[in-house]
Length: 217
Image (cartoon, rainbow, N blue to C red; front, top):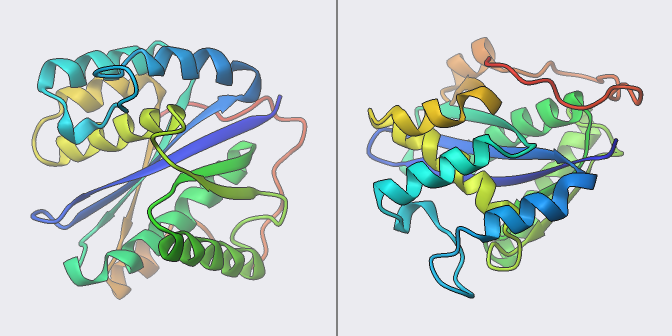
């Protein structure tokens, strides 16, 4: 098996919560899952975007995703300083990439934000490789959400978790069967206490593993 993951973010600035969510799937299933998610287009040529959809459409999207051959891994970071969202992204990205690599994912696609932000992401990933947070074999690239429906799947997971943080748990409950969730602190003290990956070199993923394991963390 060859596992892919698609990653998107969601932020609750009022509550100080940053969510980075990934949907992982076997490469062999990518075309079928992409076609299923593309059916969520509000109209031809327009991407599904969680924040633009009404509750009924959100419930439908979460239910669809839960029935597809995917697994979701998310990192929730708090508290977020609104002026330091890139710092929150950096810490959540390190935790998420560690979990994905450890689960057997070998290729990760992040939603493209803009050329400067994308370059910053890749520089950060390079730093993770140097420090041994992620293995050098983990490939990381960007794609535009308008071009890649599998990024919509990550948007659904991130949106569902953010809604639950805002006291709307039904969406997260809809994807609970495929979701593994981790929480990290974003203050310096809490970071040291809750960090989900160890410092220093780490072993590469077991090449004989069948793929990510589901559950709730």
